[in-house]
Image 1 (cartoon, rainbow, N blue to C red):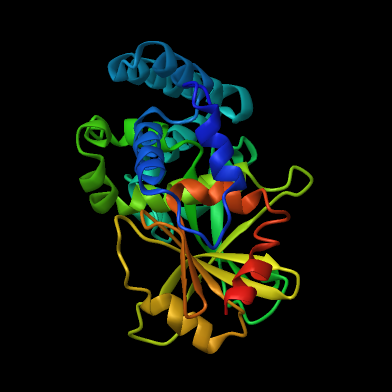
Image 2 (image 1 turned 120 degrees about the vertical axis):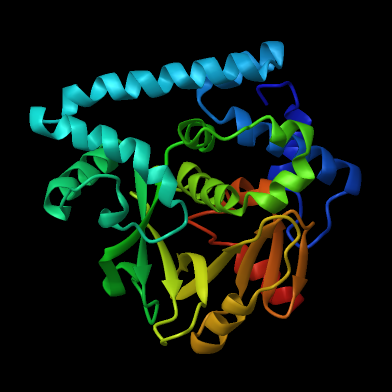
Length: 300
C-alpha cells in the first residue's frame, strides 16, 4: 500500500481461500514480497523505498535504527547488563530457526548472566520466543517446554542487516532467494503471524518436534483454533516435502494443516497451501486461523 498498490493489497484480503490466484497477480505479489524481504517493515525504511526505490538508502536507515536500539539499551538495562544485551542483540540472528542455546553465544558467559537479558529484549519487543510444545492438547502452553525455544527478531530486514547479508539478491534474483533463504522466510511468517494477530491478545508462538530419538520431524508453528491444533509449515521456494506435517497429522487429532510457500492456493489431502504473501489473509479471518476450517472442510 505504501507503494500505491492498494488494489493488490485488497485482492490479498478478499481472495477466496480455495481458488488459485491469477498467475500474473500471484507473480506480482511475490515480487512485492521479495522487495519487502530486503526493505523490511520499519516505517522510515518503507517510506524511503516508496519514494526513491534506493536500497542503499534503506540500508543506511536500517543501520541507524540498529544503532538507536543499541544506544537505548542503557535505558532499560542495568549497568552490568548492557554488554550482555548488546551481545545477544548481535548473536540471536545467528541462531535463526534453531532452538536457542546460550552456550552458542560468543564468549565465556553463563546462562544465569544471559537469561535475564533475553527477558529484557522480549519485554522490549525486539525478540519473540517460539516455545516447543508437545501439542497433545490445548492450551498449547500447558505442554510447552519453557527451556526450549527459538527466537525471532522484530524485523526481517534488520535481521539481515545485523548478519551482514547481501539483501540486493532479493531484488536481482527473487526466485533463487526464496529457494536459498528458507530460514529468513520462516522468520518472516512468524513475524506476520505476530503482526496480524488479535490486538486484544498477547499471542505466543509454538513449534513441535518429535521426541523420538533419531527423528528430525519438526513443524514450524502451531496454531490453536477452538479445540483443535493446526500445524503450520513454511517452505522456501516451491518445496513440496511435508513429511513432518504428515507425521504430525498422523499423531494428533488435527483437522488439517497449512503450508506457506511460493505455491499458489491449493488443497490436497488435508493440507491447505497458501502463498507466502497470504499470512495476513489468514490472520484477518479471526482469532489466529479461526475460519480456515470451514472452507477447507467443505473441500475435503
